[in-house]
Image 1 (cartoon, rainbow, N blue to C red):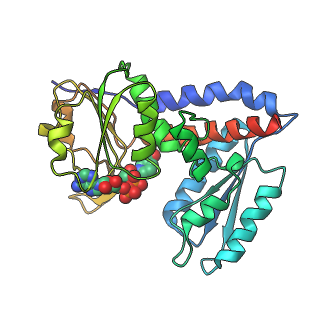
Image 2 (cartoon, rainbow, N blue to C red; image 1 turned 135 degrees about the vertical axis):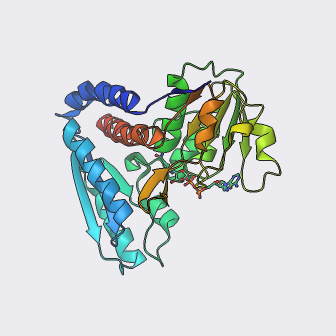
Amino acid sequence: MSAEVLKGGPIAEAILDELKPQIEKLKDTRPPKLVAILAGDNPGSKFYAKSQQKDCDKLGIGYELRELPDDIGENDMLGVIEELNEDEAVTGIILLVPVPKGLDARALQAAIAPSKDVDGVHPANLGLVVQGDRTLAPCTAQAAVAMVEAAGITVEGAEVVMVGHSEIVGKPTALLLLEPLATVTVCHIGTKDTAAHTREADVVIVATGVPGLVKADWIKPGALVVDVGINRVKGEDGKTKIVGDVDPGVAEVAGILTPVPGGVGAVTAAMLMKNTVAAAAMQACV
Ligand code: NAD
């Protein structure tokens, strides 16, 4: 058996299409504008900023990359965030991570006004996820859930195993799936036998940053496997390639599998646009 491949592209397109009339409506009241803050010269962050700019351009959303020196102090960073919080023309703020050494990303993210926190990482927005409100939930968690929904799985009563318990992926994804009454087990680095859990699951979502961690014999035949991992590894030809956290052999056992690249990542980018529009819409009402 070879798993059906559930690509992220069409799901992302559908999300972006739904945003167009909302953006049109906001034009006269609160046109969405996203500002990304980049401290230092991280090539990965620059890559993400470029693709954010492209997505915003396509939708007619304003975008600005605020580039700051890598030796910027925490107080100056907080000053920039405060200025953007107060700027009415700015409806969304995202801090590109990792930040340079000496800066505390969590403290900086907590300084972003919750109503402009389109990355969904402010404690207030993470708290709303606990209450089942995913308006400004973390983009990757929303993307993982969108993949499960697109697979047509009946979530209520499904046995879901979330491998990984980070603040931006594992924990919020687990909470978002609890809401429609999935039975969610969270595995992590301290779990004694992760495979024993995943083998029983109807849905396995993996976000560990460990290339190829989940093997074919970890998966129940026919299960849905959502691979969130994005890992840069050297291939046999010496070239760098992107691989997920799921071993390619899983395709022989799973019923549906999301590819890497071309899976969750594309939907995560679309969710950032969705959050950016949602934030502007919320601000338009006040
Ligand atoms: P993280 O480093 O914050 O967390 C990793 C998690 O994996 C932890 O909970 C840890 O306990 C768990 N873990 C590590 N090794 C494990 C093991 N052997 N067995 C079980 N659990 C283990 O990572 P993160 O920020 O959640 O990112 C995870 C992966 O998802 C990375 O590859 C990252 O690049 C990718 N990612 C993808 C997207 C996307 O849009 N597709 C977005 C964010 C992150």
